[in-house]
Length: 408
Image (cartoon, rainbow, N blue to C red; front, top):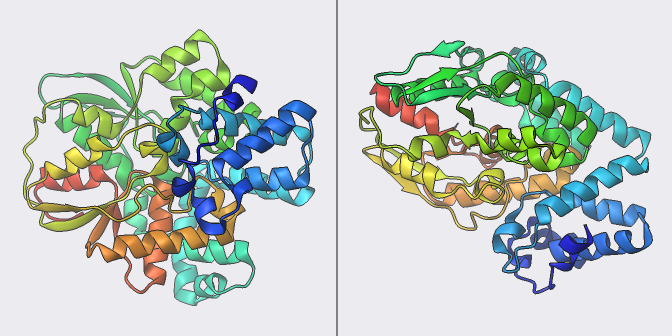
């Protein structure tokens, strides 16, 4: 790890793109400041409570990776450091229980699906609004983020196999995921339809339950490896492995770093975001007009961690009648960042408000975002500002355009 630390020349190019530095103007809450702390830990094996606090405040958004002219691999630095924090045993029992509770809920799609009607009931009874006004940050965040979902859409199932339309371009496995499958079943179904319309035979196996992204990004690497191995076992025999969740794609592309054997490296090479797959081939299915003003939100684990920016924009621009709008400061995270908004609710709320303001200022009628956490965060914070914008995955807009039935 020392060689990765030494790549940083402390130039400061990362500072304007770091969300926590923008919030607090604190050097130790910037990427280069955290790298200084990593170097101190590497030299002395010291891991103080203050150091852990600064590491935990990092969103892992990887905007600094995009901005860095020296090619510092901050993604590897922060995930390795977080694994060391987890292994140190210095987290309090309360912190350990909170993280365990989050994993036991958010990585199980059946449990999430059961929440959908309950949150609807809580909203009608006023319990959700009461929680959103709580002075307890964690409770307030749960109230803010309580999903505003149509239960019928959330429950939509994806067929095990969706045949390709016309000559097949290949067999792909669609990772159904945990949050996506639990809350946004309609996104998975739309993904399968669009891929099939463009010539792919789409397989959507029930396994794996979870790809391990949340655990990997938080430093719980033993559990992440177990889930990663299950994912490889379930999806390895396809031409490509397709995901429609930016955080999942980022993690699966890093299985080689997490596991470190030839099989995991070969699997990672087959992982694609759905927008990568669709933009790489000439379209077959006719696009029908969709008259909408849509602001595109760059999910951090798509734009920064995977370097995918143009494919989703190209796909959206291919829809006749759709006007694509760009918010200011697109590189700054919305505050979702996996489970960051549950572990660091105050900072996440500040970033959520900022992102909502930028998106609303575009005058858009809807937002396109390629990650379920971003969808929940943006929906919550635009609603809090009095104008809830519907948030669609880009494939939902493509699906609606191909079907010719108007907005999703």
